[in-house]
Length: 502
Image (tube, rainbow, N blue to C red):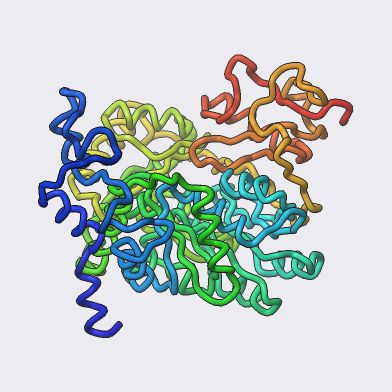
């Protein structure tokens, strides 16, 4: 980057313009109705007024996200330079909006997209909106945790050979647990055929900004990359970015699709937070991450002194993944005394709120904002649990298999995902579907999407055969009290399947 570009990176043009506008004493005869925080619930004044003072709309001087030629355009260009893209789009609907727009820009009705099996539900929704078909690729399974990662290059190569008419490949890396793969081989495979590599990198917005962090997808050859800038960096929730590089993405169509799937009244505070996050990365450099990395490392050291707990996923058994986010710490009770959800309850009893629990593990997420004080409090909770449950003297239990995706090497046939498919929990009596006890669902065809949340990755899609492994995993999720989006808890251990299929 040239010196002039470095100087520009020290600015936050959108945020600065909003602050300037706030100080000019102009009178609002436009929306929003709170008039820069002038009118707000009295109990919320101290908390909300400051943010509301820059909650603006597309008035003179403040640009337009969907026709960005002023300060928003400048902020997006600075983000592109910072993150290594040719073009960057601010998203105010999270990575969900980016995934929808990315798919809608590449796929037309009837097109086929190669898709990693364990994708976020927004990818499925994007395929449905596009009227596209999916060929699901098998995921690599980490044998130490049962957690699925991205497809192997040989499986991508098989899929490309079997479906030469595919419009591209979409993968998710890193996964929710911070496990990732080298995207270079996948990029080369699809680029040899003139196809784009689309990457849901929601959990990797911080990648590439410190030597301890993996390389970002855009630097590995990806053509379009979606990042949740709010997840692991410092933007407001729903703040995300879509980065584009290379000639394989139709840029004008992508811009149109982004405008289609987002609000026509985008949040200026969210966009300003994206602008500030980018400037913070530039000004802080790698040093901005040192404190958070040290806090995560301290937790790992402390847990190694507690034999009743096991750190999981810090090595790569069976080559299931090549990279690991040091900010993600996956822990289980090595004695099998406490399930993941039980361990979550104990930690949260001490005020340590965790990201997620699956039947076996808890996931602890650090960031550049984490401190050693945070770690000390967390370790104190682990020590209390260790002592109260007498874990020190108990024998180790075999590692559980917690994943929902049994390891097989099959490509799915092209899966139709039409908009009229019942994707939520179908209502009783809906034509063509019926509800069966979970134990009777093996071999049937699912009529619903089953989504543990978090992480929001469906373990069953509508139209997918129900395997015995999936029934077993769903049973364990229900036993552990996991939240399943779209399901009515009163239905208990049942599954909605297509009638007449056995």
